[in-house]
Image 1 (cartoon, rainbow, N blue to C red):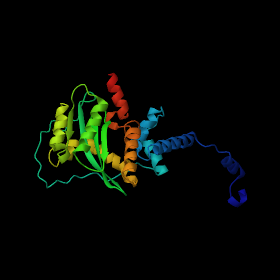
Image 2 (cartoon, helix red, strand yellow):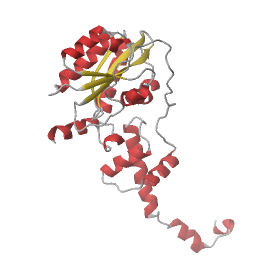
Image 3 (cartoon, one colour):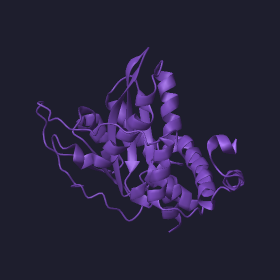
Length: 270
């Protein structure tokens, strides 16, 4: 064999007895960890969040090394096109914008944001999800899903949030100028709770960027990856995404790479 390959016997036996380097063994272990975190997140996490998760497990590794290993594994976070707003031609009466893109808070239940998004099903067609987010924790504190996009949908989401959170002081609630939020019934409901209602400017989705961002993540990480047969299947999937994943497992860079539930818990004991 050595004559055929034209190598010395010593070189051949040295090659057979060559031990795998420490770095190579570490990379194998790290790859296994990275794949597990990636799969546990249902392929939703990119390098920064995988890096933070590894650090939380006391595994000291640089972000660049995580990026290199992910490239070798040929894995990356799910991506989608950024939302680009288009101005509406419908005339809408301006309402007061109390928030004015000031999303800062010092604790929970100070500022809430709400919005409605569309979810398609095969059997029941379009269904609608109204969500309410606490700006301090980024937690989805209330939501409602229905086959109709009406005022009741918007009210039910806020009612759910109010009953769960039981705020000691009425929060500011920010929404867009959708007909559900500018209706008399919705206005009466929030006024009854002494909630101050803030509105985005016409054609300004960035005034409500946080809840827009949540709905974009929901579409990217869940809705756009599957086809729901009917309303019930979609509602169950959305419930699992919000309660099991988004609120309790998904870490957020804007709150220090912890989960919304952890952020809320910390605020309660502060």
